[in-house]
Image (cartoon, rainbow over all chains, first blue to last red; front, side):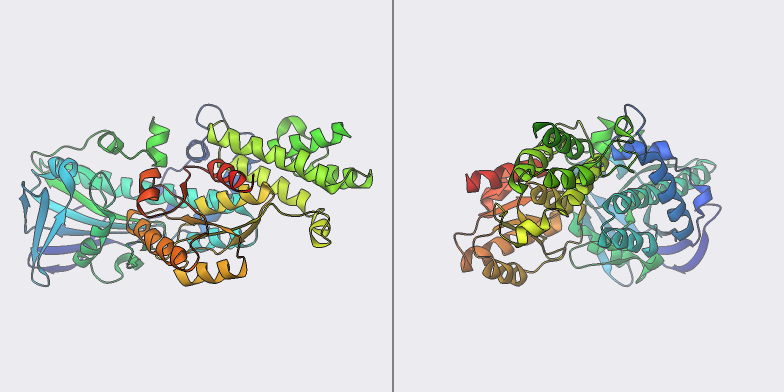
Length: 249
Length: 222
């Protein structure tokens, strides 16, 4: 799957591989990057924002608990009528994911699927909440933004490693897609979590499909000879309220 | 008098908390909302003038700039901090009745949802515009909203949700509130909701940003 992944468990149709530790130093999160997410994309932010970002990046560095987990799905089929993917495994017999037309078209030529979970851990979420409770809304907000950025950067890294690994075997990968992207309902997260072990990487799901810890992401990636990873995932999404899409625009 | 009130307004607009605060850079070393509010009161300016002509006017500008994407969340939070510091001098006047709030706003993120940044920005702006805010936090049940409405019978209620899976809970909360208290006005907000959804679930208003919520509340007490 990727050079840094360790196989933890294998069963017919599903193979679970997990890379437990990813160090902050392996990610390239910069002060400028966080400034851009905070809104300062046209000119650098005035003090105290750059200093506060540095301070919060240091807090994050000390308190991050990045974990990434991948599950290989080998036994599945696509349904072009419902724009769905149907997985088969011993435990659930079959699960049908209604991923919507856009995601369907991006992954329909996949020969294998990866279900992924990635988290920045509980500590950074707790620290952000503690700052807010003490009336320090600014540091709380910056830590929240850093947490989101880190979890995406961690998954970018794993996805890039995965892409390099498969490229050597003449396979390509797709963009990563999560419930909530495009027309894939957030509620489908419940089914996605049935394909991964309980509390995989320390991430659990509430009944309203919120991941705990909050700074976590999950979704699927397609792998195959005839799939393609597109430059920027937001180009196919029509969400008007997403902070990342607004920044891109 | 006008000079110091204008200066207080400017401190709120630009997030100048106190003299020691380095932000904004072009006001470094100048007095902030903290010192100027205390000074204005010492000079006999009424708390009402300071609140209405200085603090609230400053916060209105902040809300407007945020709506127009001229400032971002961090600057808004600095303004809220400056407002908070100035308001610490005004508490005594609210307690003795010399100052009154425009009304009470009860706000929470609906049950099932744990997101609070959007809610917090709305409550900061509304509080800064002279309202008493009862912040119920996140994952708030219909029963808790109703309990608070009973404690504050003339309040206006704000509901927040960030996910398509939790926006549906807004309808349950709206139905529960309207069932017990049909005259209570409810405004909703959050990334997945819009005007159409607000009408569909029987809420009274929708706002895409904090300033829209402030304007709706102002309309309700006009």
